[in-house]
Image 1 (tube, one colour):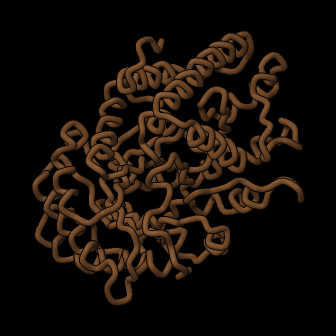
Image 2 (tube, rainbow, N blue to C red):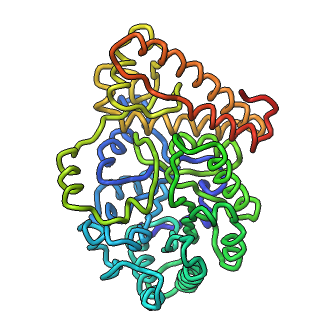
Image 3 (cartoon, rainbow, N blue to C red):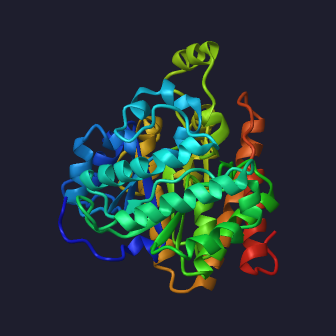
Length: 414
């Protein structure tokens, strides 16, 4: 894992999907890499983001990714240390650089910054990271000056440590976790980032739901990423699901997403300690809903909706998948291979964007795909409304078209 690496990975400039690798995804990724038959190649990955809690287990999958020359980034997950919840999660609590108490807006936070940053970079180096993600804290709207200064300090320490001692040099990626104010006024952060020798910025909004959020919030988020790129700081959009395709049409090179998840992120809920009732409810709900991604809809649907679609003879023809995940199989076990299916389809979508030669043509391509998705969604709603299944909502497609129209300069998107 210490082989020579290019100084600038391709995913910083070219449209790339970075799967977010957790303990639930190993088997699906290994199967997708292997290929469907002896004569067909597997899915091609141009990078991956591995959660530190998974990397700490030294899983065989990381060696497999390295053997396939897949650049790996390690998310240090330090933003989880701002709330008491991480103390209830054993894998987070046992990370070698985890603090003994939540980091809050007081003098003690600055004192642990040096040790936290050094430990996180050493961990990423040992795990074979192709680039370092600099440990960071969220830019909370409350006490904004404190969090700005703390993040400046942590990024400066990471920059100084990169290439010294037992931390070999790697391209450095800053991590930005903006709240509402920072998204509305990205200059507050961008001007500070320009003072550091970084190669890219990993952006994870504190609260983002691309399917439920309004058009203006999504446009504001897209504009923040576009500003970063305009300043020569390629952004990587965190946990955006299919909305990442809209962002790539607007020139944002890379995004990450969990496999087969309806992506949404809420840091305050994630960091709030669970009550005993919530812990018991989570145990009973273990296993979750078997969601399935449908490429023509650009949407990950709940299991009951996915089953209703594949069992409906008037609909299933719209959603036939000819990729390696489904080419030699039927619809019946689609839910069982949902993660592998998601990886194949998402990689195929992004590859099509990468092969499109100009930015204007990429906007046209995604715009056409969203218009088709709107038509497919209307057909699904009509068909399922006649049955017993509740009807899924596809209103987000119109909002995504609106973002693409407003930010990409399409004259008539609706």
